[in-house]
Image (cartoon, rainbow, N blue to C red; front, side, top):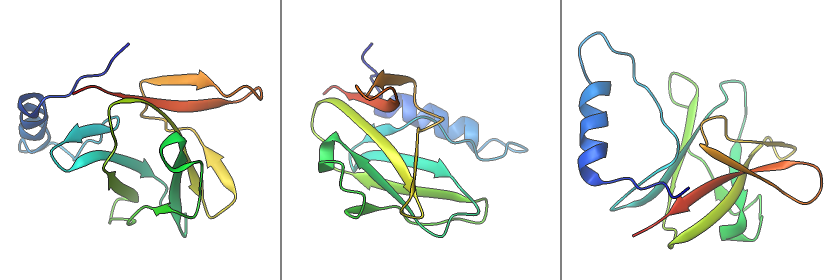
Length: 120
């Protein structure tokens, strides 16, 4: 399954999220002109990173910013087209699936990785 996000779709989602009385809603990773944005809810974490096929599973390379007032961490990465597997790393020890990911894949070691597909 290829996930395709368009700027029009993102605009409509942002309008829905900004509607009066609606709390901000976070979605699966999404692509826009700035790159792919990943978000992770971990209010108790001291730091969160993302490790994946795009950074050679280096848990020290891509640290998320946050948390915001609601406990969300985020990062935007300039990823190329294709299939990207990843996990979030909390406090340098806990490797966690993205609960917002729409796909997962077997990692070959009896665990799962989150998957994001990017198509131009």
